[in-house]
Length: 228
Ligand SMILES: Cc1cc2nc3c(=O)[nH]c(=O)nc-3n(C[C@H](O)[C@H](O)[C@H](O)COP(=O)(O)O)c2cc1C
Image (cartoon, protein in one colour):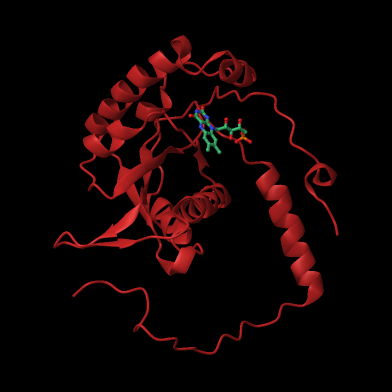
């Protein structure tokens, strides 16, 4: 039977009564999460040390609780641990990135990337013990080939990946959002169906002992907030 996101085609409300948290607890939780998330950094230099797989599975499950257009959950998370497949992904990614850094990106983009210190060599793809390759389901594809439209796919998958990165960080793991454009090779290497389009590769693990990150500043709350 085809999986359905609801228990039928009709609106069927069920009660939702989460316990109301005292305001001081809300404030303490919000402030603690703000401090914790401000410590998150994209890591490009990983230790090969293993990480608890269940923590990664839990983070993916968190991501899949994300809101999505018409509750269609238009995402697939491919968890890659096989070293041979990670190597295959790195080889293909570095081939694309070499063309990109050799000029395909254009001078304006390369200038924007310069403070990050990135180049076409992508050691994180083989050093991190896990890669989570996120795919957008551009449309729903039944086994018999019939299709159904998906709504707000970019927005939905972006929110889910944000929740994934948050969950990984809170669990004590590090990650990178990597978009080795164009990413068509990912669907080919991983044998994904024609309705899926790669969104990002997310290496997950612990930072290498000598890990360095670019010295970035974040916008202050005042710079991103408009009150009306
Ligand atoms: C959509 C998106 C695509 C990104 N693509 C890459 C990438 O291909 N390679 C890379 O090294 N970092 C990539 N990043 C990471 C950003 O460079 C990084 O988030 C930014 O510099 C801020 O650093 P922080 O994550 O440590 O706060 C990407 C981030 C996002 C959100």
